[in-house]
Length: 397
Image (cartoon, rainbow, N blue to C red; front, side, top):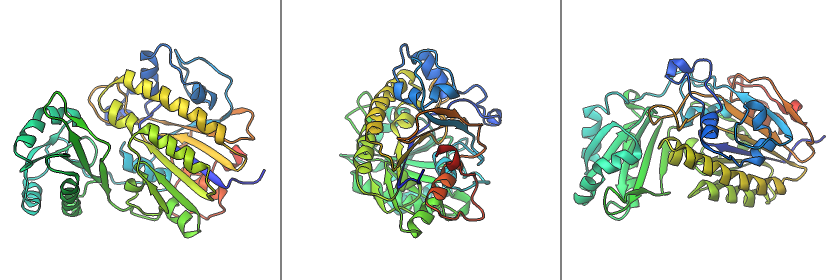
């Protein structure tokens, strides 16, 4: 069989399938995003995910069993941490050995806040670890009443500095400007967070505040070339859908497409895969993590998976003989677990192409990097000496 012209890689953001062996070190020993959602959903209508072999990786109580096709296995993360950036970077071959700095327990240092206030012209309120929805309930009315003289700054268990701004009061342009200042400030080694995130919202009071899809992530550059850089250098297309371009700070991307929802992200993926590309379509579906995992809403998460599954069915109908589909995740975010943050979990690797008429379950893999190495081998591109992961291409064709 000839290799593929096009690889479609879909990241169901935070869809973990069970605690990793070292999860206890992160306080996540009992986490299992898929199993706990499945326990809450009855029935659980995800036939296309089950068709791709999700049930072979973990039995479902409520999703009807179907005869699977495709190749599947569980992936473990070799990098330290459990965040978006390290997960995606590892998929593309990078081994993050030193975790990004976090300010979960203390908030940001006074020196950082004072510099941000001075350069932005806004007074900071918040400055603590919090849920995005809860911080708006607590401080949104104060920010709004100040006519955006004040701005909400907060963090989480991840290496992030997040700034909330009301779209009508502060405005998106000003919010993005302030986040750019924060990104510059947090490039100092002692304050270097993985991402600065603009968190715009709308609404008139704490009972009606709602975050919008105009979020913007300002990441640091990957510390070494990734699979995306190698693809681009070799004249391959790299189409980034959702927040992929943000995660890689635009490096290695040939076309970036913003998504307002996971549904739109799937629609964009289906539309783009019909075009004459030679390379990678790389999609992140963020709603699972942002709307349901962090908010600890297993039913909302489960329904979002059912909606995704329908779109996945539409995508499968468009697969041709030159396409390879891979569905995976970047970390867990168990909506039934304590706290509101990510969980250290294995993730699924579900692969399918049109000539595949059987199912095969591979042994558990030690790195998310198998995804990137499979992509490189498909396009006959040599990996760099520091990249991690082994190719699974021979198992797929």
